Image (cartoon, rainbow, N blue to C red; front, side, top):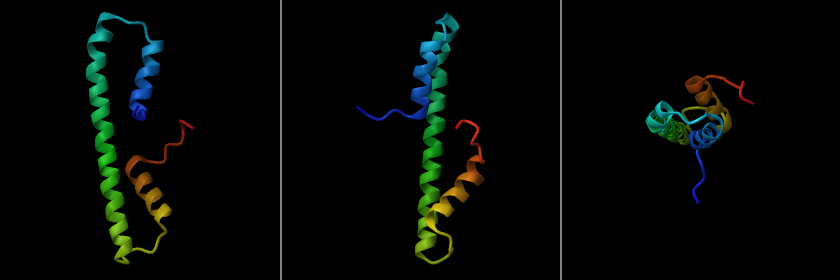
Amino acid sequence: MAQQTAVEQLYERLERMIPRTEMYNRDKIIYLKQAKEMEKQQHEETALSIAEILLDKLEGKNGLPSKELFEQYYTQTYGNNNKTK
């Protein structure tokens, strides 16, 4: 079985919490597809940026350790939102 994404986990939790209504049943698939597409795009952008960072590092264009580079990229891209922890 494939590992669940954050979007899929949230969807399952909401399914257990929210009463089923006609409007909810109609719209939930649309919202799930939109959220999964957004999540996919974020993963793609992250992977491409990490690849670029690694290439720069290999070419000696930056002196920061890889973990710091990733944290810097993540903070610039998604902000420093630790409220969910």
